[in-house]
Length: 249
Image (tube, rainbow, N blue to C red; front, side, top):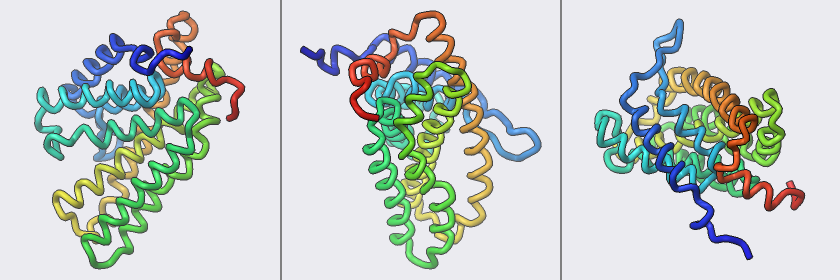
C-alpha cells in the first residue's frame, strides 16, 4: 500500500530550505557585470526547491520562506501579502516537470501566459508590445515545459553535463513563469500601461537570462554532491521517480 503524500513530505528539510530562502531576502542583489542589472540571491534557493523537492514540498518550502522573508525584508513585498504567490506557483509548475508530469506544467504555463495577454486586453489600447513581450519572455516557458520529462531524466542520470542541461530547462520554466505571473499581477494592481512593455523588454530579459544560467550552475553541483555523498534519499522527487520508473516518459 502506498504511503500518503503527507507521510512522504520531508518536513524537516522543508523547514530548513524555507529558512534559507527567508534569510536570502536580507542579502543584497548581485550586480551583473558590465550592465545596470541585478538579480536576487533568493532566486538561487527558490528555484532550486523545484529540482530538489518536486512540486508539493518545493512549493511549500518557497511559500513559507517567502512569507517569512516579506516580514523580515518588507521592502521586497511589492504585491503586499500576496508577493509569495508568483514564486510559489512557479516552483510548483517546475516541480511537476521534475516528477515527470510535464503535461500539467505545459497547461499551467499556458494559462499563465494567457493571463498576461488578458491583463493587456483589460488595460486596453495598443497590444503590440504586450504580444512582443509575451512571445519573448512568457511563451518560451510553455514551449520548454514540453521537455520537462526529458530534463528530469537528464538530471537523474547524475552525469554533471546532462544534469546542467536538465537544470537549465527546469529553471528556465520556473523563472519565466515567475516573471509572467508577477507582470500580470502588477498590471491588475497598478494598471501598468501597455506601451511600457517595450522599454521593459531588455531590462527584464537580460537579468532573467543570466539568472537562469547562474542558477543552473549552482543547482548542478548540489544535486551531484548529494548523489555522490549518498545523501540524495532525503529528497522528495527521487522516491517518486523510483516508484514510477519505466512507466512512460
